[in-house]
Amino acid sequence: MVLMIELPDLRQVRSLVAVAETESFTKASELLRVTQSAVSHSIRALETQLGCKLLERSGKRVALTQHGVVLFRRFKAVLSELERASEELAVLNRWGQGRLRVGVTHTLCTYLLPTVMREFRVLYPRCEIHIESGDTSDLISCLDHSTVDLALGMEGRTPVWARFDKIFEDEMVFIVAPSHPWASMKEVPAAEVEKESFLVYARASETYRQLKESFESNGSRLRPSLSLGDMGAIKEMAKVGMGVGIVAPWTVTVEVENGELVAIPLGHVSHRRSWGMFCHESRHLSMVEEDFLRICRKVSKALKGVENEG
Image (cartoon, rainbow, N blue to C red; front, side, top):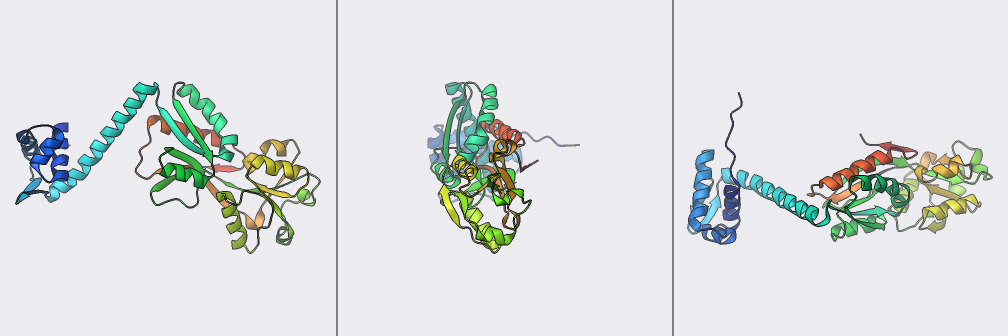
């Protein structure tokens, strides 16, 4: 048989938190804009209800007992959640169906986001949407400065204040024109890779950094012939025989199916990359954000050459 314990009311929760933070009944009453006797009554009633002492006096200072410390931490979390709920309700009242502020890498903006937003709009037709595009490192900076609430990008150097929730993994591929000598190969020999110069994504990007590290850790050197800031440009250069591109497999699905390009595994220099969502470690996603992330997971399952979570 489970014993039912009467839960504290909100006045008791606020009173204990206020006294603990100010270390004073007087200051707590001023903070809560109630009488000092009202605060004292709430604390006494709570102690009687729980059957333990929560506060003790030391001169003019009021301190938490061991029981009080445990309860204070829980009460702080409760108040934090209530404040977040109030904020979300305020947003709903203002915008009709909430707000979404998200940073998305250039590549995901092109190959994932349009389908995601089409489905998202059906669920939240009146949601205020703000999308920031950039490289993963730029988006994490936006997250740090609170210009976005979520960021979709590639896992790499995640800051200590952020958390990363993986959505999918991939492995990059070589892409060449059908007339290229590599086009008939299922895997390119290491000696051939060592001779080649490549069409790669911008050198300041997380993609380039991880690719360079992968080459070096496998005893090869990444030599770029062209460093381009646009995935489409890499594909077009490869089509006209300007070199060997290195791209995500899901960015060349149409071109490979049409016979315009041939995709070949990276072989000994391959590296698995994780894509997902960054946010502040302490952040609890709103319903709008949770649905956005759920749709991202769903849509990513249709991408070519990826392995999904869950």
